[in-house]
Length: 149
Image (tube, rainbow, N blue to C red):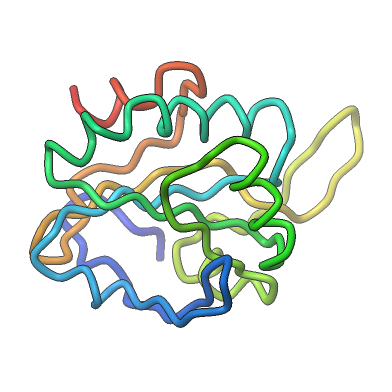
């Protein structure tokens, strides 16, 4: 069953770029931007991350915590964060369990080749852990405005 606005966001436990445990329930009482992206340091993913970085103060002022999730490992996340000065947490979902919980690990097709991968999707979660919005048509260069609209 696909998640939709109004559903309780599935809790998860993952590891951040430093190997520290991160649980969604740790953020109860705060709004969360949970964004899933395919790969560290690729053009679209970098544009999205840098848009969130450049607007980080606006998002924090609106009481948002930012959590990025991809199937990359902790070392890849550390390099991505360092290269682009990202001020938020990236979760290493190497076993794709969080991707699967949120229904974003799906079949994709690029240049006629079919494969499994992360479908770029953002879940905006309210202070009570309820999904208030799902953004599945992400504008990488203007993502913050999609979130704050």
